[in-house]
Image (cartoon, rainbow, N blue to C red; front, side, top):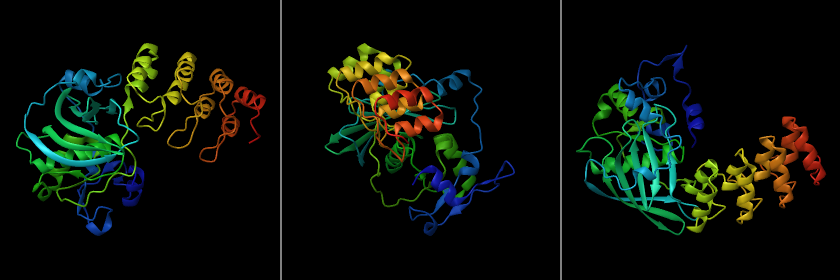
Length: 348
């Protein structure tokens, strides 16, 4: 269930722009997880995070260009190791790169994957708090242990593993999932909501101390790979390095796009040409079925549309009820329509 569907299911919690005064319970029969949940949105979706420490404020929004490599090898402040048994589906492999990068002060965690480990960084501190060991097994990865803690030094081991599970689902996969809270905290719902705000910011909507049946996520866990990041940076050498290291050139990122889709968004058309030269399928499909040509049309790039068609892109692929030409006509991109028409694109 997506965030938007869950929010619609339980309705809005604001009244005239003011947060609802109470933290209410959602009964087990009224939610998909079958346990009582605290609706913490009146706090997490209305409060703004502030800090009197300029460095913390700077840290919180410093992850825009971060690929996570600076955190490799950093030890968590708590050395405890907890055995884990978490499983996530993957698409061929989970590539080294970014699982979640904070974009605002209300995002409390950054998540990276490097060298077989998931690295969990407290965003305001830019400090590694937990590192999870991962084994990749055909169509899924298995998380076998977690070093460190996410909150208190004496955090219950079960809370550690549940928190990692929650962070990957709510942050990396962007799906609705109940945040875990320490046992007993539910006795003070407002304190529990404030704890969720401190720990998870506005990514937390519902919380529970109760365990429930865990099911594997429906979507595969994907990263913004180092290859994708090299494409976004326009770094041809890093692109070649990633490919030489065995990175599949058509691997999809967390946003469901292949490197060639990302290249179409770059200012330099040469990056897209480089990827095609290196073997990228020119009609590689996104998770929603879109080809790079459709992305070029959406960005109104005549140059990139012509490049892709000249390299063999099909003029009439369809995704979600649209073709490149129908998109171009809908958006009024007449120059792009002319290019598509001249290469055999059928009328919309």
